[in-house]
Image (cartoon, rainbow, N blue to C red):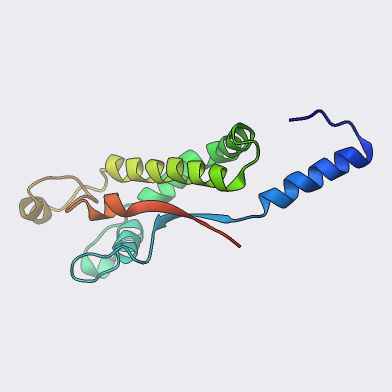
Length: 148
């Protein structure tokens, strides 16, 4: 990038960068088209797992909130690094950051082990890993870049 020093040239360069930064939004999570074979939205199941459903005996397993708490402090620097690497290509930056954050979300699903599953759930599933049954929720964690 060219060196810019003060005055009108500096203001023009900042305006140019700012105009390229207001081009889209990044969404990470479970998109509305992700569904189980019976039609149930994956996002709804993920929300129930995240926040729990006490009346149904499902405890909260906050995989999404835990990921955000642990990883979000890294995101601003990661975005800045990607903006520089892509010569301020916002679309490419959002694609790269979206992929990275969706992988962090998947890792958080894999890492969640508490609270443990009920004994009858372990018997039914054949394993004791919370949040993973068919693997559809894990595979459905993704991202998309929205254009304004």
